[in-house]
Length: 464
Image (tube, rainbow, N blue to C red; front, side, top):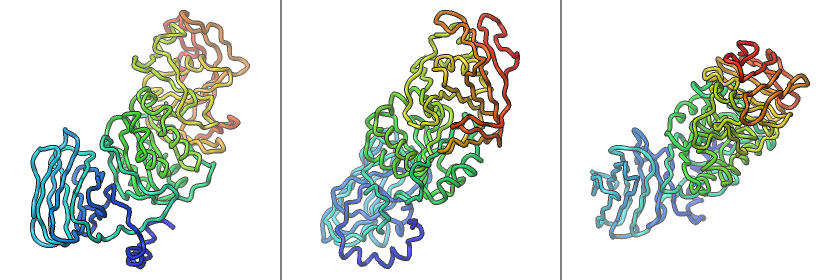
């Protein structure tokens, strides 16, 4: 039963829960908490509560003091942000407020026993904050009990993590089918609405948890995917260090999600920060339990069994790599995601827009004879089901390159121009299908050859 359908049961059990349960200390804010009536309960004094402030966001917290005493509040955040707080009783204006540019914002006041509220606001910036409140402990209203989906309580968020949450912080339990995961490959540029609404949504169903991971950027996907997927939550995590990639909080959020999407960026940076970390295992967990793992641009590049890895140098360009099979811009690394359907696949993106035909074919020449290269235009995607059945959406095309009996590796040697003949090119457009288990498809097929000694090195002249 989904959390959203348990409101009536929750209200009936609240009194019994409070009288028979020992409350865990609050460690993170619980959205929505934009008003006093939605305030996140602070269940323990002297406990750091991890929060996140975004544009137009106001966060309320509630606690109860057992007796007369001192309330001390400290609000820490990134040095580039300016967040403020104010303390309120049950009625009237603020009893004390801190609205300076100090980090942390600190203050204390003596109060009688009773119920109190803290309002956290942003003057500028957005991102993480840590709220510490010290008070004479009393009985605080417990948070509503949530469904246990098997992942335990939410760990405390690391102070260094930038994240943006739309929707509910808790876990909405999904009904996925173990072993029936899916993969979404998207070629960059404009995102493909139909891939999310017609492929991902039917696979995971509505009211589920969506996570965006990236090493730069912010919350641009939150409202977009929340609308298309009718999600319970969309949580963007900026995981820009190996420490964060190994943190309990980041991996709890990823593992408990039904759909994880890797934003565009730099696949070399993704490999540097994520490969060999717990985040890699968490991605695998989502796929193995039947969820969807996807990515666009650099995110798509990361999902092949072999990843094109520029690793600090400029990206490979078709006109350059045809002149030397071992051009300095060509480098490959192992992937971070184990999908048997993509185990012998290299992916490429921004395909026709950046004339990456020769680049992708040279990539193929660096792999074993049974390997494939899957390349996608911008605003184009391929949704791959666990049985291999895959469908294209979007305005461009997906291209698959593979060797056949007629393929000739005439000259694939370091320091020499590429001469690579009769590579099969399969072109798939919106609505076309291909099965990555047996490679049956309804796409358009031609053979493409490259001769890097020539100014016009393609045969046919226009291989697209």
